[in-house]
Image (cartoon, rainbow over all chains, first blue to last red; front, side, top):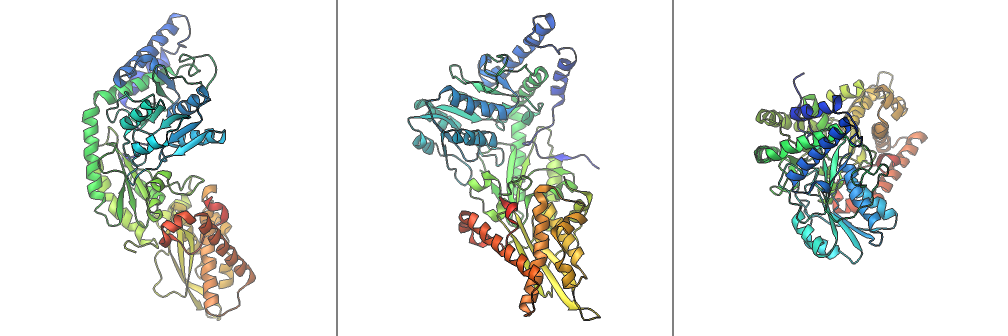
Length: 384
Length: 174
């Protein structure tokens, strides 16, 4: 079987060789606990400090504003739940309806415990209107959470404007930057809390961080040895943190080159896929992350499409929730008003730094035939 | 997650498409759940005068399991007498495929329901007696459609054309 054409980089991405190389010594020689007093322990502490400084430097933060976590799900939980517990008198949260479930379900969890939650609307491209945020803020509003770029459809949110509104109204602003970090320039100026994961960025799984602006109080959600200045207990994942820093360096130092290549792939994908009758682009044509393109195909179902592409050695994914116990279509596609007859037939193509022109060529050669094949057995014909 | 048999039937499904000359059609599923199955049957008497499913085909909008179960139910019912076909259950369909993931079991129910509805439609249109088991299943299927449409009223009002003919089992789309 030929090598897989991997177009599912938003789900997770292959760990870059440089990242693996940077991590390996910290399994073998640098295995000590950074809290240990001996020389090995002190070396491990320096390693963590250096990684933290490198990340802070690329992001434009201070090192002690970076709180390492076991990934972005934890970072999102820490942001919402940690803030809720630190400011118990503020009982209102505002979220977009297209947030990752790590944010939405944290908000749901708080709602069940007496918090009020406002779920904003988005337009047909998935954009939040900053004016709607301003309108939703109340006296007791604690925090607004709007992602930087959406993981299913790629749409960029106006986080600078939303953050400025929050700042002026003395409300915390959290943004889930999992897909945006290392793909687009990010300004922390109006951001209080920002979540990042390493594995979307050619780093390892199980590590990420929450940026916490100096002066922002959070109650920890993990209790123990008081690591990360008491904000996140648990022995530091040293190899993971080194991998996250290496992935960050790689991404930020080559951001312009890699992102413009991804943008070019995205343009080609959109131009050519939309030539297939009965297709639509989900998301925003231009205000988008460079690496994500989401399409719907009338009359066919997403999982079948993924399985057919898989037969051709192409790995992609669908926004359709067919494999989850909840068989309703993706909450993101529903929120942007994709017709149900098309929401089940969605395909997310997400490129990575390793993606090549010839892989895009092959994908575009294979796709029309696969769509035709599935439409031939569907009761819904294009043009119905 | 899928057995080899499921993948085989998905890759090369049997009896797919629309019969040019069908006796009856069974339409089940709902676009809200992401599965819609239309099953066509051609009923003819055999040498002994018993009515058999001479030919069968289907059109399905759905996941891997929905396509594989469509293919399997058509294999199981082809050439069978109506009584034999009525006796085909969703367990038969899933079993012949070597099992389905729990979350996909509703697909096998959908396939068996589609067969049920096609036979029901055939007998009904020809003014025949309808066996009690068939009538009961038909009632259940209709009831489920009503429940589903009620639950997804907001969606369906937005897209009145998206309503399928019938719904899958109650627990399959919750």
